Figure (spheres, one colour):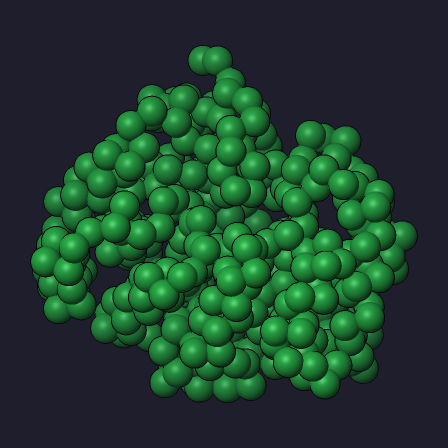
Length: 350
């Protein structure tokens, strides 16, 4: 996929496209790139489940409606047997991916995760443990008086297979300092991802936009993701999604569908070294997810048997596996279930 410096779009050109190109022209350019990268006309999804193991979080990001303080009445750390039950339900439905994410809980040290992940791998060896954002990994390291390298090695040895790109928000510290001042900076986020890649762990990258950033910040985020990948990153996919203001301290309004499609298309144009772009039906709904397949998206992410973080902000779109397959076929594509690392498990006939 790699292009020469002369062929690659630069920051100035990307910003000009984002600010001045009309939506349909931007979408057409992204669609041409998607078709070139994925000529088989397949749109994929993974059967997964989000298990939010704790909502106790010291970060207290102003855009988050999910976190609770330790003394809150509804604060929790899920009992392990409940976690195992949730994973068993996932496996029973043909699921292959576990996404465990939670708050930055100072009481949970490396031993907690090692014991939990070893038992998950023992009970469910075929499930990909795709868990813990860079902020969580950094928190575990600090809580346990370990380096990032030590933490990642121990988590991997215990059964952590890959790392999702949560907590990226906008990879510009001026924005991060406004909306999540207690969370790691963008360089620390990238450092975790590069260290994970060096250990042979696949990763993904995300962007939450529409909170308080400007167009220049969005463009900078995309180029920082591209540069991390150039430096040896292992991003298999990029997932942009819109800030959901409901029940949050930050408040504000949700980005429009046009905003979402423009960011999605620009992502496909800029990120020439990342093979897959996910459409966020969780924040956009099924109709917009269908349109996204013509604006650079080639994947619908997970079926998400459970999702609590975005839902806490009042956004609760749902889609069954059957609905997802129907959506893909209705848009004129071939539908296929994949693994976390984008191997095809099975294709569904029209």
